[in-house]
Image 1 (cartoon, protein in one colour):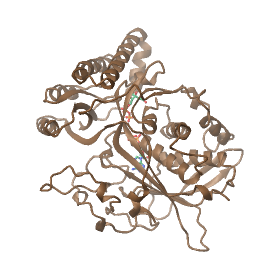
Image 2 (tube, rainbow, N blue to C red; image 1 turned 30 degrees about the horizontal axis):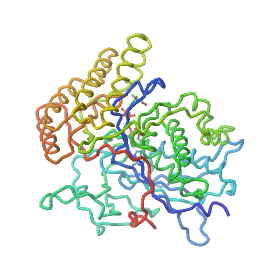
Image 3 (cartoon, rainbow, N blue to C red; image 1 turned 180 degrees about the horizontal axis):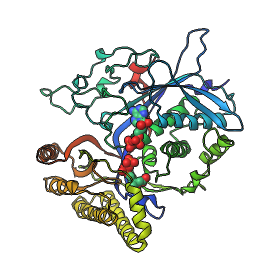
Image 4 (cartoon, rainbow, N blue to C red; image 1 turned 45 degrees about the horizontal axis):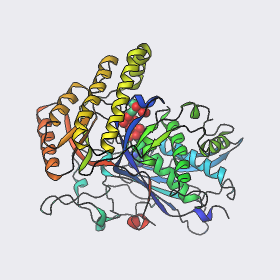
Length: 490
Ligand SMILES: Nc1ncnc2c1ncn2[C@@H]1O[C@H](COP(=O)(O)OP(=O)(O)O)[C@@H](O)[C@H]1O
Ligand SMILES: C[C@@](O)(CCOP(=O)(O)OP(=O)(O)O)CC(=O)O
């Protein structure tokens, strides 16, 4: 019977990322980057949509109830000449912005499922609902939003969030009130809802740069695979299941992004913290686009490849974190957008091959040193290795004319590193004006000092910076207990 065995209700979550060291060089297969998964996750709940007797519905509905106007409905059809299954966004009522990451993921994953599950007729996808729930740190606090500070309580549950006719309002039930970490002492403000409403559309949301697109593509891919495929064909608990997920999510993410990045963000969404060496970009360059002749067979062959073509390396053993030490993220707001940083660095690299090779090799040595110091729990040496990472990034920025560690960040990080308990800091990933990563002692006193410092600094400078709750964590994608999300299950 078509897909019946697989249509399970599942919840999958995938973590965000921080590239602590190795920005730019990780785009080159010669080099590696040190990436940590984050405690902030994007969860996807997949369940069947039950229709009334006689009602025929052929829809996949994806909904992000933390945002306004964020319900995407898709029809799907089989394309001739092996072009795969194509999803088409359906519009009715208020126009809804397309969501390229969601739509592309549907194209890739439904095509893959139809190709590998031979017991399923090509139109054998029962209607499904996919609910996306992102941990609060992915977006910064909406200005002038009072409602988002309401206490979490199951009695705040309004309309069932998945009802196709749901009126979208900032009223999110907390599916697992008991699991909300309550950091605040009882006399302070009540805890926020686990998944707050941001009061805006996704387009207007203020992202904090934790890698939302890779986390959503990965968790959506895993949720669709686990929902539609029987465990014999997809099991996230096995190395093969994670390999299939990784390959499929990388392909979908690159296609949605319209460029082939290093893929460190999808790799860490699947595998968690690791020393990452990228795959050869040519691997995806040859894949036809969804709907083009031969897409389905080429995609399945690529995804199921046993590792000969996928030459990326995920070294988990090379990464660790000493007890009592935390990697924390700061949300930085400088009001400046930096575009085309990678392009500019590459232009400089191509024009200055020798200087670039020296810089890249120097940074690689620091990446390896930092990984070793963290892995071997040499707490006293962390600062001594992170300082040179910053220096090399600053020099790379100066040489290529790109604000990788802009002066406003440099001054702030220099002062932050003098706060007692702070071991080191960097501008993560590509750098720029929007984030900072801090390695610090994991205790309440240090956290208090860091928060106080950042508050003071933000008052006296143009740069606005705050410590987020999110921290580095080693675990990658995982199945969640559906019971914790029962308020969302229909
Ligand atoms: N909660 C969400 N629900 C649905 N789609 C999301 C969500 N968060 C992120 N996305 C998708 O990811 C895109 C953001 O990707 P991108 O701009 O690359 O940011 P990031 O650096 O966080 O990955 C959004 O435009 C949307 O397509
Ligand atoms: C330059 C890079 O090596 C690192 C960019 O890291 P970020 O963490 O800055 O990435 P985004 O979330 O996409 O902004 C590009 C890459 O590796 O793809």
